[in-house]
Image 1 (spheres, chains in turn blue, green):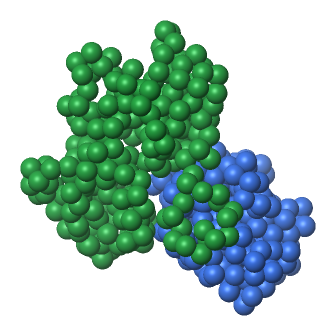
Image 2 (cartoon, each protein chain N blue to C red; image 1 turned 180 degrees about the vertical axis):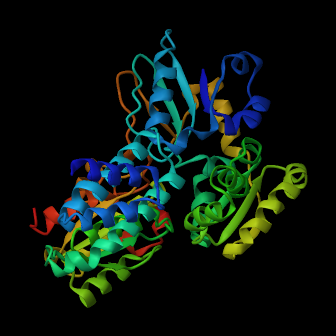
Length: 213
Length: 239
C-alpha cells in the first residue's frame, strides 16, 4: 500500500488537484486507515513542498497549488478522522502580526494543524498585539501561532509576546512562530516556545507543544 | 569595491567614479525571493575577491538573505535598511512612514519595472504556465490583502516616463481595491552609498560595518530591542 501513499504524496507535490482526491478515495475504499492516509500520504507530500520552497526549487504558485490539492484530499478524510476520534489537541489561534498582511503561510499552517486534530481559529492579518491578547482571553487556546513575512514586521512578534506577558497570559499558552525570515534563534530570543520552518513542521511543533507527540 | 543588486545599478552607475564603476558588480534582481540563495551567491562573490579590502554591499537585510554573511578577509559595509525600498525612498525613516500609512503596499520602482517584477507581469507569466483561470486564483491568493500600489521615482522625468507602465499595473491591481500613488523619493541614501564606496571610512550609523573575521547578524539592523514593552505600544514601525 505504500505505493498508493507515495502516489498521493507525489500528487500533492505536483499540485495535481484532478488526481489526489481520487487517490485518497481509493485508499479509503481499500480500507486504509484515514490517519495513515493523511500522515503517510498528504502530509509527506506537503512536507517535501515546504523543503523545496525553502531551497528555492518550488515557488509560491506551486506551493499554493499543492496546498489546494492537499486540502481537497484532507476534506475527504475530515469526517472520518473526527469519527475515529483522532487526537484533539485543543484550540490554536493563528494570526499574521501587526504591519504584515501576508497570510499564505499562516493559512497553510492552519490547514496542517486542522489535519493534525486542532481546532484552528484564524484571527487574520495585520494584528496588533492587543488583538492577540483579547483573543486569548476569549478563546482560551492551548497554542497561539504568529506569522510574518517581512524583516520589518517579524519584530512585532516580540512585541506581541511582551504584550501577552503583560496581560498575565503567557503561562496559559504556548507560543509558536514562523515565516520566511524567522529562524529558531530569533524564536528563542523573543521568548517563543518554538519555531516551525514550514507548514508541516509547524503542525508537528503544535502537536509537541500540546503534548500530543 | 561595491557589490549591489541590479535594482540599484542605473542610479549607482551615475554616481560612482569611473574607477569604481568598472569594478562594481551587479547581481541578479530576483535573488531575494529565495533568501538562502541570495546569501550563497553574495557570499561566493565576496569570497572570490582575493585582495583584502573594504566591500560595500548595495543591499539591505533583504528577507534575512544577508543574515549570516561573513566578512572573511574583508570589511563589509552595508546600509542599515530592511530592503531596497528604504534606499529608494531616501531613508529608513521614510520607509517606516510609508509602512505606517498602509502596511499593505506594493512598491513599484524603475528598476523593478525594468526587470519585470510587477503583479501584471507575474499574472501574464502564470497565465502562460497555468492558464488564465488558475493564474487569476494564484494572483488573488497573493495580492488580495494589499491596499496600495506606490510608484517611487527619483525625478519627475522618471515619474513621467514610467507612468504609463505603472498605471497599467495599477489598473490591473484595482480588482483588489488597491489605490495608486506616486512618491517622489530621494536619491540621498543611494548617493551616500556611492560616496561611502569611494571613502568607506565615512560610514556612520546609517551603515553597518562588519570587520574582518566577523559575521553580519539581523540584530544589527534592528533599531531597538524587540522585546521592549514601551516599543510595543508605539507603532511597530518605530523599530
